[in-house]
Length: 243
Image 1: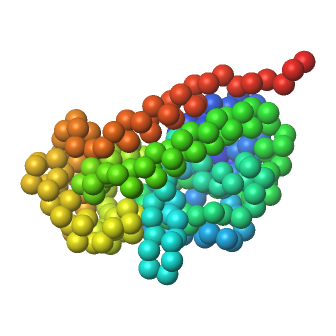
Image 2: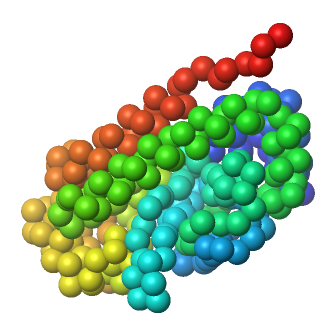
Image 3: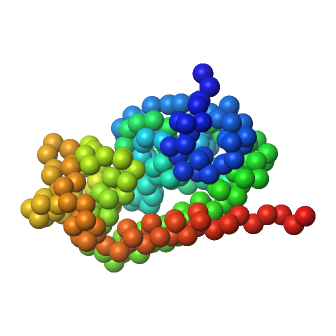
């Protein structure tokens, strides 16, 4: 079944492509419905598919050892999962884990490579996106080292809301502890504090953001820095080859 361009427009990277190149790309894609906690890629394993989320969110997790892990990225409809292929690398550096279930467009890795080779516009868009991801990875590293759990949790909830396009979503303490790299008791304390301040409501794994503006004030400055770096990277005009 062919995918309508209107469906692809939900992903910002796809929406940036000229119509002719978008249609060629969509011919190689399939629509999928991602499930909560579904694993899309594992570190050290070949990348089999790339994903363009349209109504879903995917956490990128670095595994430190058998027990420890840390979230290093969150991809929604602003991006793509499988950026290593843009850099001509065939192996995933992180685990990709579905945090927000929902729709995405999926393409086989080999078809994506072919599309990348044949589409200068796609190359330009994805190179700028990789630049944004690199900046956000550096920001996350500093955030993890210097900022308290409560501020980091507020940042993560805001990022998730941006990608879920809803005030409420499902996420457990265990999942948050895994992606933020802290003990479950730390997540419980931070969530309890945010709830006591009237910023969120949390019950049985369901979080509702009650006061968006105040939650932004409670978050560390990394949230605003991430949005700014993405805007700057994606707004930069593409560099055309010399005639």
